[in-house]
Each structure stands twice: as structure tokens, then as C-alpha cells.
View 1 (cartoon, rainbow, N blue to C red):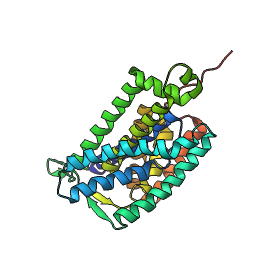
View 2 (view 1 turned 30 degrees about the vertical axis):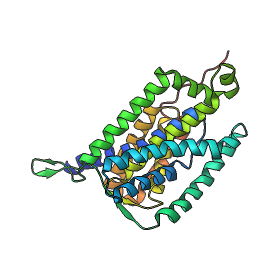
View 3 (view 1 turned 135 degrees about the horizontal axis):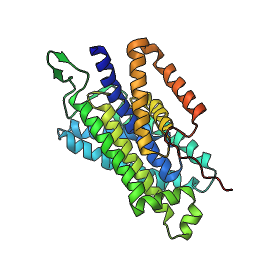
View 4 (view 1 turned 90 degrees about the vertical axis):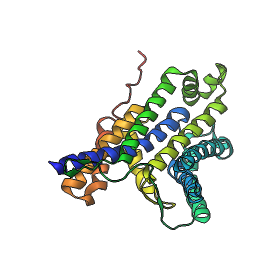
Length: 292
């Protein structure tokens, strides 16, 4: 029984980590219609910014704020300088460009920050809570991760459903010409979409790094599962990203705990294939409108 509870709690925390990264993918997809493969190294760079501040002797929360701010600025900078010139062309151009950014950011980080493994602290305890005479697989940092992801999800739902800015961002993403005719400043909305997505990605990087080791490739193992979580829930749905992350985290945790850790990657592939076959748009995808 204790193994079942610990496996479920481990899956919950793991799923929220995947959900955090999936939320960043959903945000940039919903606001720009671009699948950003550079999201992971962008988050890695901002995590190293936080680590530099921590190594200088400042508090965790100052490094936390600096990482989020640097993520906001990095996203805006990359959109204006690197992505903007290819906007308006075939959609695949921007996607290919993000793959190039993936490689470049890895190389730059290795040169600036080094290739060695470095420990990253967590603001809360990473030892499991004690219930009676037993220790369960839920830590203070795990609770912080769950709360942070849920807060971000609610903020994104509110942004896109209840604010004019969210409506303009969606209009700019769906049809730029029509959005311009309606008075929407498309360029600003695309920059804002990249900046906010990079900020959420920075949060995901900090949550993944907390209490663990970081190096220029530490996000690479998460990026695949983050993409699977986003596709599982539906790239258009913040709620779907969180639900997809939870389903994936719980599934992989039970596979690892009861079947074998070597089958985790195969299980993720099987889940992805099943979703794409049965519901290609994801579990929370809306049915497309049909003109009759």
C-alpha cells in the first residue's frame, strides 16, 4: 500500500514538472502558432542566470525573480531579432529556426557557464513528509511545484478568456491580416507571446532544477515528455497541458515502479501514439467548426 501511495505521489510531482513545461509550449503556440523547440535551452539559460546570482551570495528568491525577468527579456529579444525576419513566410521556417536556436543556445551556455554539473538549491525541503512512522514521497518543494503550476494555469486561462490582451494575442496568431484590419498591433502581440512563454518556460526550468544538478543539457530529458504532455492535453488548452502532464507523470511513474524503469520511454511513445490515433487534437481539443 505504501508503495502504491508513494508511486502515485511521485507521479503527481513528476507530472506537474511536465505540465510546467507543457504550459510554456501551449502559451507560445496559442499566441504565435509556432512550435518552439528552443523553449528548453531558453529555460536552461535563465536557470544559469539564477545560479550565477546564487553563487554570488544573494537569496534564492532574488535569483528566482532574475531568472523570470531574464526569461521575459530573452523571449522578446529572440522574437524581435531572430524570429521576426521569417514571420510571414511558410510556418515551417520559424519551426526550423527554433531548432537552430536549440543548438546555438546549448553551445553558448557551454562556453559561458561551462559543461560541468552544478547543484541547484530548492527553496523548500526535498525530504519527504513524515506521516506517523512512515515517510511519503511528497516534499515541501513538490508542494511548491504543484501550487506554482496550478497558479500559472489559472493565470493563462484568465489571460486568454477574460482580457483584451489575450483576445488580441489569439487574433494575431490566427490571422495576422484580419487582426491588423481590426487595429491589433500584431508585432507587439507576437513579441508579448514569446516573452510570456519564455517567462513560463523559465519557471519550468527552475522547478525542474530545484534540489538537483544542472548543466547545459539538463532540460533535454524533460523536453520530450513536455511535448508529449502538451500534445496529450491539446496544444490549445492550458488546462489540457496540466491534465496531460499529470496523466503522463502518473502513467510513467506506475510503469517505472511496477513494470520496469527501462520501459518508461516506450510507454511514453505508446501513450503518444494512442492519443494521436484516437484523438489527434489532444484530449481537450475543441471540435472544429463545419460550414454547411
